[in-house]
Amino acid sequence: MRTETGPGTEVPPQHKGTEVTITESDIKPYDDSRDVQDASDRTTSDKSPRSPQKGSKRSKTVPFKVTLLDSSIYEENIEKQCKGQVLLDLVCEHLNLLEKDYFGLTFSDSDSQKNWLDLSKEIKKQMRTSSWHFNFAVKFYPPDPSQLMEDITRYYLCLQLRNDILSGCVPCSFVTHALLGSYTVQAELGDFDKDDHGSDYVSDFCFAPSQTRELEERVMELHRTYRGMTPAEAELNFVENAKKLSMYGVDLHHAKDSEGIDIMLGICANGLLIYRDRLRINRFAWPKILKISYKRSNFYIKIRPGEYEQFESTIGFKLSNHRGAKRLWKVCIEHHTFFRLVSSEPPPKGFLVMGSKFRYSGRTQAQTRQASALIDRPAPHFERSTSKRYLLSRSLDGDEDEADPDLSLDQDQEQEQDQEYSNSEETVTTPTRKKDIKFLDKSEDVLLKHQASINELKRALREPNSKLVNLEKRLSGTSPGDTPEKKAVIPLKIFETLTVNSLCIQPLTEPFVVNVTLNN
Image (cartoon, rainbow, N blue to C red; front, side, top):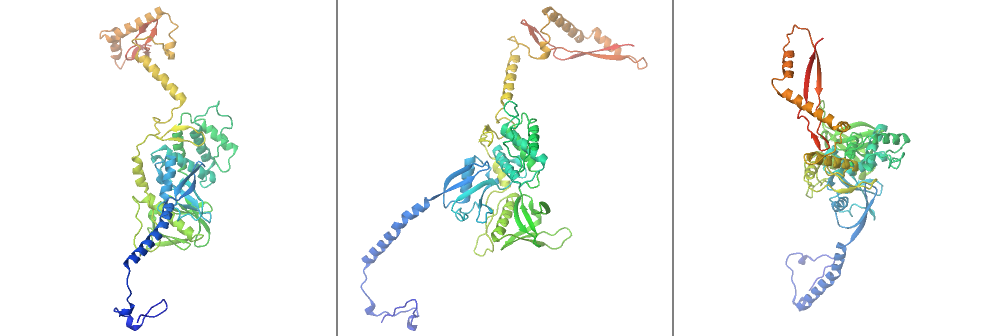
């Protein structure tokens, strides 16, 4: 007798053991060929429709847009399963940028909050909207921009700082606005030229949130003094002055303290900053922070005990929601790893890991500087946004920078003059210096007499028994008790080679001075 068991039936007690008794009537003929055929049919029927789906899924691409630092748009397609690092590599390749570890991509979430794209995760898992629109921006502001290897990297840093200043994120004084604005004009327009530039040639530039005519006049006044400064030098001066600003490279987040007062938490290369009413009220350097954590919408930092303290202290802040607390925590982890560690730590593995597994997976600042030192390529061509002039720029020594037309013309003239002076023994050259030209109005007899007197003076000074030498010895041997004598020094200048009517007058190799003593 056979017993069937369904989802809601119980197995009889005699069938609960490991042995089951089967009667002869329950045995039916078994057809191997039919089962094999059915299995093959199921295999082919199941796999045949899935294969084109998998193929189409792999080849599916998604369009994206990236707003660059010069406000231009970069559009392309990317595979949906790609990670954020692939997208950043595409953008940096489009910009011809190698030092890309300082930069990142941002996007806005449903709450219109800025989020940094996680380069180690798939893009589709981070985007909550159907349109993939990103912004290219500086993520880690270098404390010393002069250590950047290429000028193209400093150029994009300048663009980011201009946007920060113009938006008011980095406040400046009037003097700083004028100074940075003058460097911007020099980098974009070059030297001041009254023929090309009118009286209001800086009105198209935006230097400050509230720009005035007085500021523009001050910018033009400073710009006129930068003649000969290359665009690369102007941008270096720009970032060297911008890095001294108090809000340089500070990523701000809205929060509330333990008393419910609105504050701003800022993360930078040096640590965590606390602002209230635009004034910094506290600062926690990275070495002073022991632990960073978050729970729900609360953000906590554990502080190392001070010199006169025994115990650690924990400070908590209230964020708008859970996502805001996690966003702040991730920014702190990334900045601490990038600026403080030699190499990034791998994410924890295992099933018993408590909390988030997020870790910064990119290169640190130390690794980035080592990689930048290995850059070996010609200086990249890049186009500055306003002037639209293609420049060859990386080194500040001027060897590879685009030469100024006036400067190159002067260099060519100097090279021609050097060639003329080197061939003076074979060809007749025309003197061009002022002290040579003033002798051209003299006759040939006067010049010959002048040359003869010079030669006679040379022989007199070189002979040991010369009267001038004996006179000098007698004058120098006067006793101390004698009447003091007045001495007059008369230098005799021997001019350079003159060529008049194919007659060369050679100069002395060294200047000679004759001391003549006059008695009272």
